[in-house]
Structure formats: structure tokens, C-alpha cells
Image (tube, rainbow, N blue to C red; front, side, top):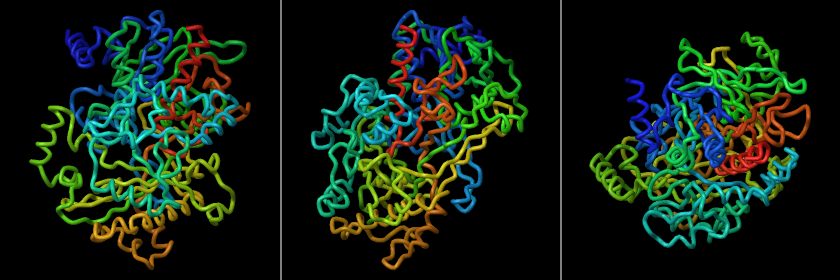
Length: 605
């Protein structure tokens, strides 16, 4: 009776019919489905929602994490609270990395979403598709023109719906409506409120237009320049893959079951097809010692557990490098040394500047200096989803390149082409850092610096044959001189921006950590010291189950089917052979929409 009550309660929370959302494998009435999707994250929810559009197709989604309703769910919903989501929260896997030799051997946290919606429910909401070059390179490397920009644009539009900012302002000069979707599930807009920086950023793009040109809409495929930040929010709240795809499907369809708080422990080999190992069953469990349950997919299992989870599950199933698997006691079923390799991630470092104490930033709320102000802001947001909490904290982002004659490019240009970026700059109207202890008071603005086309490569590997043991995560930041050189250049570039005339009299001083490198006589060595101390991940891992047209390379083929197997497809960021030279969220949605069509075509759905 207790289990039934809990299931009814959870289904009520998502507005679903009875029996669609479960918290225990024993509650499900069936063990066989047409498709099993592992991971209710960014891509997995797209696949589940699109496949169940056909009422004759039954889909089970297995999610390790928790519901996105209930305890602390406001942190997921309120845009300004996005940085809280991975910190001491029930919504994160709580991973850490190996000691990073490029970061003074620091072990850093590695946030990944552990909740319905996955990292789309816990990230910083940034929506950037990438450049034409990025997707045309995808198409070439994968060997399939469907990944090219000219084809992907329809999937980007299919996934999104442009909505106007929550403060009701005219946003006609903040985006190009011609390049956006109007009927898709994911809500998209520019910031909910204007900030004290906006006019200064715009003025700087005019004054320093050669280095920082204004770009009306980076999602047009032409990403270079500085423009208005577009974020996954609408009506004052976050729009995640759960709110956009999964919950609407759960509330209207009987052919979708979602099982949460349950770990996929391994794929089970069930036979062979034309001499290729066939995997039709999935084993799941809730704790290390709990009973294991098995579910079977008539057609296939789709791994959408992310760039950490998907390769981990493949390796736990015996699919990977046989020598590495044997070290943890796993017998190889399919030899593929590329599983878990080619981890690519964006390094990020922040810089902060001190402002007069009467400046209107988000600091009184985010630093906890003004509890009454927070109470008032929460009341306003709760009442009508307006006010400062409907803001992501900053309204501008820039994607830029180092000069073509820079010694940084002495070994060649690793970007996908001249329209792709080497680095990103962004601005926050408050103290922003993922590595520095925040102050308890004051007013600040922050610069964000990101290497967007890194050449360092890391890996995901097994720590144990126990599926409840976290894998070994090594992003291997700053393994190359190029990555370090670009970050140094990005910081120099951001300082040229912030020292321009429009900022005169606005900034009192650099934050103490920043002072040595903000000085006019600072050296590259000073900046490198700062970089190695304060760099962290911006949480964009891709590439660990990369797609490739080459028979002996990569993990999945052009249809994202795992090579030399039958019954397994991977649809998530792990299949990207390269990182787009922007934030990858929009790209993951687009690839998932494409993959859903590929699956439908394969089975005549």
C-alpha cells in the first residue's frame, strides 16, 4: 500500500496518469517494451517523447536520479538560482576528477544532472547551436550529410519556441526571429530583466567593433561577435527536457513508463545476429546490494546517460578496451578501445571587478547579504514569475577568435573553420566563480573566459565492476600549449574590453585575486598562475562514444548504433566527435531530434 501511495503521489506531481512514473522496478506491470531509454536527460527525453507520439510504441525510460518536483525544486525552476543546482544538492551525481596536472594537481568537482531533465535541468541555461563549420565538420567525420548545418537547422527549430522576455520589453533588436522555431517544446528567450552592464557592453561593441563586433543572433550559424544571451527559459522559469518533452508526454500518453531512482547496471547479451552480439535486455538496480531486475527491448535500447554515464554502462557490459576491462574483472564481449576515450570539455575561469556599493547587481541576493530582498524577490517570482529571479544574471555572450598570425596557431587551427570560435567571453552582473570562495558582501561584475575549441583530450574509465562506484573522470585540462595560450589570450582580450571608455568610472578596482593580472605590467606567467589556480569545467563533456565513419575508429556509426553490436544506440553528447565551439545544449537537442527521426525511419514508426 505504501508503494502504491508513493506512485500515486509522484504521478500527481507531474500531472500524469496513474502508473506512468515509478520509483521502484517492482512496480512496473511489464518487463518488455519496444524501446528502453537509459537516462531521462537532455537527449533521452527527446527520444522518449518523439517515439511515443505513435500510440502503438511502448517506451520505458530508466533514470538514476530523482524527480524534478518537490524538495528544492525551486532551485531548478528559478533562472537566477541555476548555479545552486549542482552544489550540495540532490540533483547532482557528485563526481570528482582525477588530480589535474594542468591545474596544479587539483581534484575538481564534475557536475552532471541527477534528476529528470538531466543537466538540462541543472545547467546555466545557455542556448547556442554552434557554427555552420561545426556541423559541416560533424557531417564529414561521421560520413552523413544529415549532420550538416543545412539539414540540422530544421531540427534546431523543431526543438525550440521563441518567447518574449518576462519583463515585456521589445526584444526585436535582441534576436533574429527568422532563424528560430515558434512551435517547439523548449522555451527560449533573452534575459528576464535588463542589467547595469547592458548599455556598456553594447557601447563597447561599437567602440571596439573590429575586435568585438555586435552579432544580432549567434544562433544563425554565424557565431562570431558579441550579442544577446539566449537562454532556455520562458514565462520566468527554466525550460528543461523534462518540462518541455517528458512531462507533457507523461500527462497525455499511456505508452510511456518512467522509472526513477534506478540505476542501469549493464546491458545483457541475449544472443547474436549475423555473427554480431545482440543486446536486447537491460539489468537495473537501486543500490549495490538490492535485487536486480531485467527489462527487455523488442527493438533496441537507447543509451542517453551522457558523456560520463553512457561509456560507463558500455564498459560495465563488456564493451570497451579488453585490457582495461580485465583490470576490473569484466570479461570483454565487444572489443572497442575507443569507448570512454576522446573526452573533450570546455575549461572556464572567471574574473571579478569591484563596483560602488549602490550599484544594482544581483549580489545582495546571490551573496546572501539581503535576506529581506530575497524574500521579496521570491514573493514576486511566485506571484507572477517576474523580477530579478527571472534573470540568468547576465545578458551578453561573445564568441571570438585569436588573430590568424598568432603564434598560438603555429601548429594549425583546430577549429572547424574560420566561422568557429577559439574562445568565449561572457559577463555577469554579480560575483560569479566556480572556484573562488564568494565574498559575503559588496557589488561586483564578472567576466567569464572559456576555451571553446580545446585540443586536450581526456577519458572516462572504470574504477570498479560495481556499477554504483563512480568512474574515473580525467578531463585532462591544459594538456596542450594551444589550450593554455588561448585562455591567456581570452583574458587579455576581456581586459581590453573592460578597460574601454564605456566602463570608465564604473569599476573601482579588480577583485584582489585578479589584481596581479589586471595590472598593465602583468606577464603571461602571472596569468598562467591565475589560470592554473582557478580554472574549472563549464560542464560540457562530449566525445566518449564518438561517432565516426571509419570502420576501426569511434564507438557509434552514422546512425549512432554501437559498432559491432546489435540492439544498442547511443544518443547524447558522448557521440559528438568534437565539441561545438559554443555551449553544446542546443546541439544535443538537435542531434536527439535527428536521431528520433532516424529511429522512426529504421522501424517504420
